[in-house]
Length: 166
Image 1 (cartoon, rainbow, N blue to C red):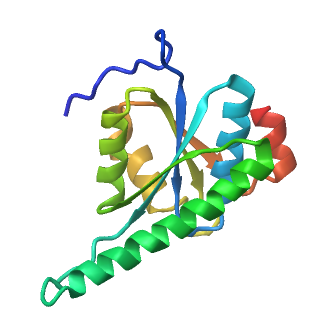
Image 2 (image 1 turned 180 degrees about the vertical axis):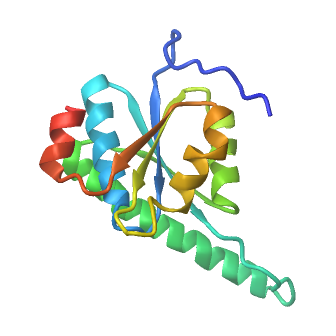
């Protein structure tokens, strides 16, 4: 799929760091890193939370209720992450909540917003690997992904991240 050209550094544009927000503990590492980088560079921070689409409840409005609950959950995750960004670097992020497939929604948003220059994810610290999204994007999709992917190790402390990100 061809993606729109990045325009981050053209007149009237500013680069954006996109952070994928979820319920994992390591998500805070990605938020802190991205917030510190955008503050240092004068860029913008965009946070995306994606809730899974409820399956099989299309009758009697139950599907609508489940979708609304999923959107509320995504909004709560975004608010918590926005608080972290403000505390880490005084940054007020743009927040986007969607319902659907995580990887598809990330790619759609990147295609829709030509100013997104980087995707920032955090790697999990468990023995099971870095996490499904990081594994997918770093594996098969990495060669064709439309922007660089920054993977923040989940084991980094706030001090480590601040030293790296500015």
